[in-house]
Image (tube, rainbow, N blue to C red):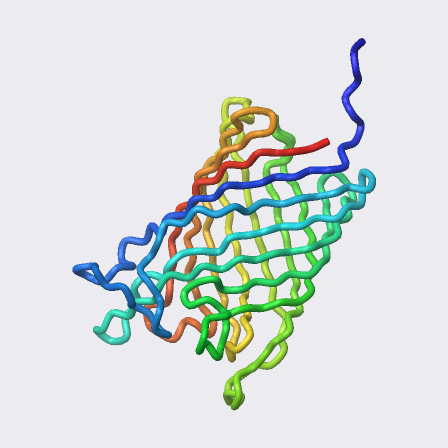
Length: 276
């Protein structure tokens, strides 16, 4: 007997295996072999990392749902100059987890709100002995995402989003004179898919992100411009491979040198969708 497809799928789980490579050309001092290049001591040379990330979602109906996300932030800042002296930062590895509620207003608009926490796992880890200023933040956020543009074989190709976050801000003791106190952060994104040759199997994409980050124990937030470009390859109905580059240029409180910090990281991802 022919079974009709389900009108609705409650569970949607996407485990992702992510392999990242620091791809900036100037992250390692000439000669190499240096194992501690950053401040505080313990920062290491860029490493290639393999991690499990992904998301899980439960939808109550066609509109409302709950979701969990695990996000990987990794890379090494490129070389900057203070006068004629090169400055090197070390490897940084963060994990971020988000628990959120979603509201799919219509096929092109989604609202989300939830709680997020991000912490540094290296280098050094937030909980490392003697680290009095751990890099982490936690708090509540809300965002809206909207798809638009001409109708194509893959739907509307453009997506924009805006996120507003209110983080708890812990301060160092004694409190620095330039500490900005509790202050909301923001994130704006604009992405475009390129559906070529009237197919959706191989899809290049490009995006820009403009966002602020405000870690506890950091007196001021930083501002980042990010360019993301890559290609998505749909192997089967539930399997997707992606290769993409994140290229960051940091401003705000971190732009203290004439040549501001930058970071370039290559990601290779493989995702498998579990659903019912």
